[in-house]
Image: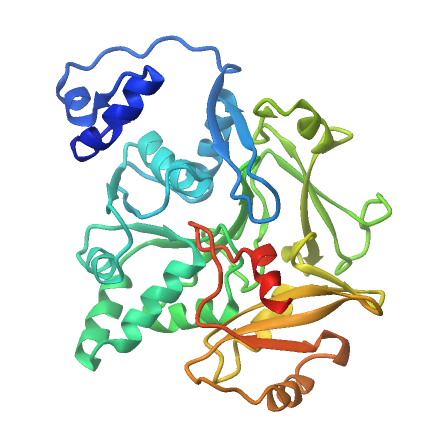
Length: 394
């Protein structure tokens, strides 16, 4: 296990128990450089565990060949260069932090700088110090950075905004980016966040363009070498533009297996295509994610309703800071739409919110249940754990 000096005391008992050797980062850096061993590209290289937002986490095994493909596709798509400098504030046990940020920077010969933990003030200081050229984060982090900016003085806001303009690329991923956050970030920094779509099992599969159009609410087109198809509920290819279907993926980016779960590995594929369980539409030349089939697609009275669409509308309400929409079981409708709201006000008039929504959504998409919470349940990456949220409506 490779560690930094500050974790030595903490991890020595674990290393002794597990009979692991601890290697200090500084010792490795100070030793003379050695040639790397020759390793077959099809050899297992890494296990990352899925986030567990809908099921128990599974160990995703990737090979050296898979990782190389995942890295090269992003280095080419996002124009990484040796003189790039990126700040890494994401967990290294997740694909976003270890592949998109760390591995791409190492592959390119660029600089990857770390912070021990997220701190909005320190991140803004890094963004405006003139060294960074790229920044990648999850939507929750952008939300917190916006909140910090809004609380700053007028003079400080100008300084923060002018400093952030100089970066060449800012990326958002790992969860759906609210359109309100994208619009506000563009207003503050002039940057249109580049959205992409990926999973632990596949790395990145879809990306908005680095140089061309970045459309809000969309995740662009397949990266080179990645095949995408949409499959409807009857197992047929989706032919019509705007019709929803499950995203299925094929390519050298796809993982080898779930660690010690051969049945789960077998069930994850259909005719050689990896089944993502994410629902999307192909809309005017780009893919748009509607959500996770198990938690973001609400089956109510014969309709399939995207929770993400309703969330984007709710966030436009002046009294709603954040929200999450789910389906809760109902004997008559199968599921009904329910919304958890975060507001600066202690009380909200839910009937007034419903009337406001009637101007923006058809009646069957308007939530029938509302609750107010101080915060939404989230995992370490900031994803809302909607299965946990359902308990709040019991």
